[in-house]
Length: 377
Image (cartoon, rainbow, N blue to C red; front, side, top):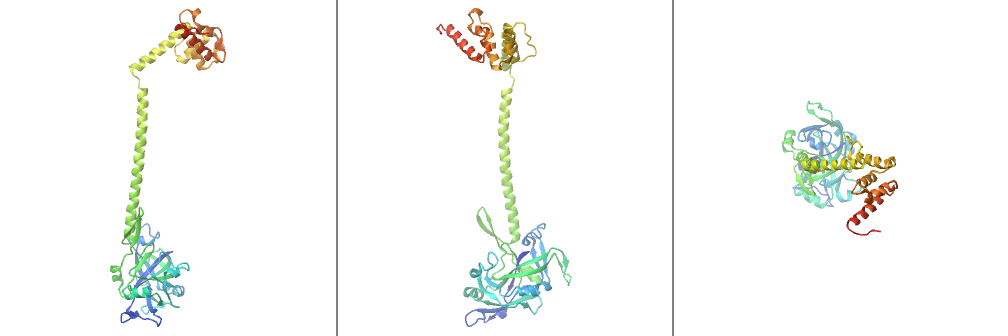
């Protein structure tokens, strides 16, 4: 179901000496053609999703068979419908009738003598709208909903079509300068022109768009589709660029971190020498504590633990790595063992307490104080 409008110009019979026929109250009365049967041409972009797979600017031929257009249900739907001055933003209902109506149709619509058009009697009650007509605003555009089958075929006289209308219902009939699509599909049919002339003179409906909150108009639904595709492509390009910049910045940051890690991990002769000296000192200190221990294939931590266990027994096996490190430092001989208070702490068994580290620190401070000539109680 989509919404269509047919725009048909007034015929001369509606005027008397250039003026609309009036009632004694000043109302304008008329009997106008407002729709026709046959094939009308649309752009694919005007047909919503029905032909979304086609090029938006391609022509879609819609057939409205007489048996549908002039059916009782269709003609009855023209009765007592509101007239409006231009199409309202949405269909007319009880909610907005008072604001948009300029008159109404009569009781009965009928088939014109040409067997192609629907005519309906009307009464226009709004003075400003009557003035618009007499100033040259002389087209009616019927707004209605239709159902159709998007199945190709041919009319009885051999004209091909892409879809066929299966039902329609009138909502309102608008006085217009020319058809305006807005979100709807529009057809501008001139009742006095041939089908070829209609095709050549067809006025595309102007469409209002927005970009970044700024309104602007484009000529018709095809232009709208083209502009919308451009805007979509632009927005996607902007989003892709932002994503690429973010990815680049992320990679740049990760690269800097990786380069720093590589720099930190770089093995230089100086670093090798420091590592070799440290390893040699651990081995030398371990041999001073326990000359017979085997250090080949052992890590520095394993060497320290073996040295401490070898010196003070299996009771050291359960010590933490921190306690082992402290004990190892304390057990390395420094001068006369009898005067080495740090070493004596370990040998006296303090290492077996849970506070071995604190004892070691206290002993170390005492020894350093002695070296400085200070007296520690």
